[in-house]
Image (cartoon, rainbow, N blue to C red; front, side, top):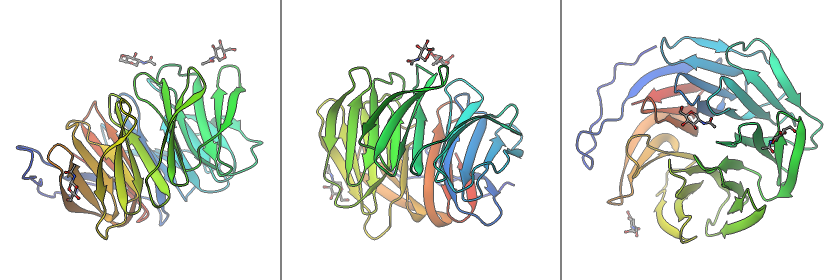
Amino acid sequence: MYSGKAPLTIFFISGFTFAEFGCIRTRNSKVTCCHFSSDGKLLASAGHDKKVVLWNMDNLQTQSTPEEHKLVITDVRFRPNSSQLATASVDKSVRLWDAANPSYCLQEYSGHSSAVMSLDFHPKKTDLFCFCDTDNEIRYWNITSSSCARIFKGGTAQVRFQPRLGQLLAAASDKVVSIFDVETNSQMYSFQGHPELVNYICWDANGEVLASVSQNLVKIWSMTSGECIQELSSNGNQFHSCVFHPSYSTLLVVGGLSSFELWNMADNKSMTIPAHENIVSALAQSPVTGMVASASHDSSVKLWK
Ligand SMILES: *[C@@H]1O[C@H](CO)[C@@H](O)[C@H](O)[C@H]1NC(C)=O
Ligand SMILES: *[C@@H]1O[C@H](CO)[C@@H](O)[C@H](O)[C@H]1NC(C)=O
Ligand SMILES: *[C@@H]1O[C@H](CO)[C@@H](O)[C@H](O)[C@H]1NC(C)=O
């Protein structure tokens, strides 16, 4: 399904356009997460309908996994340079899938005591992923040995490894974002300053800064100084998600209540663009294709370029 909307030119970056390019709808259920495969050829999305929809970027055809999760899927992530992907769910389990054969689940990690809210693969040690739960517990899991490598506290809403290097892990819990050193198993920073729950975090492509989102505020944190270097308040919109633009490194796309806030951090200007009919719950990007994907509680996933 294409929607032939005219490209939108933003005044502050010459030649920049950001327009809707495609849209898929699920049967009346909220979408909570989305992620591109490393080669940019697949987009996975999931949510309240308990299955993963795999969207082929070449022909815009979709395939789905069976509904093996018993409750809402909270996060979906591809394994780096692989067709494998993993899902986290409120049903207290994590499942591993292969997009090349999505009709069955490769592995299930259950026996957990609380809802799993987020997961992420290490960008280099790709047999390692971590996940966090509503008990604020983070676990590193080794796929090869099928064993838990480490358990520690500090993450509830989201966990994300630093891109490329994977030396750091960012985790959001309550109003705090913690940065852990994966190699030394120590906490490097504890970022405080959000007056409300942090519900989303994202790294820039180089892993030098991290953005964190709470309903009224986005904060940008520097890994060099350990400080908040910039912020944007929502001015009445409700922020829910964010992603750095794949082609313009100073541009942060923030998902709000039915709209995006495009924030050019270089000149500290932002503009609002209508996007969905409900909360923009998740955002993803692919540096290979330059595409941004948005998932929403309006039951749709959209592509933007
Ligand atoms: C993934 O592929 C890219 C490009 O071929 C390569 O640079 C990178 O090191 C690979 N990552 C892993 C974890 O194998
Ligand atoms: C995972 O387990 C395998 C087999 O025990 C081991 O060779 C590998 O180094 C482990 N990976 C990590 C990242 O610890
Ligand atoms: C960016 O702009 C906002 C208002 O739009 C302002 O409150 C804030 O102080 C500015 N930040 C910087 C670093 O100039």
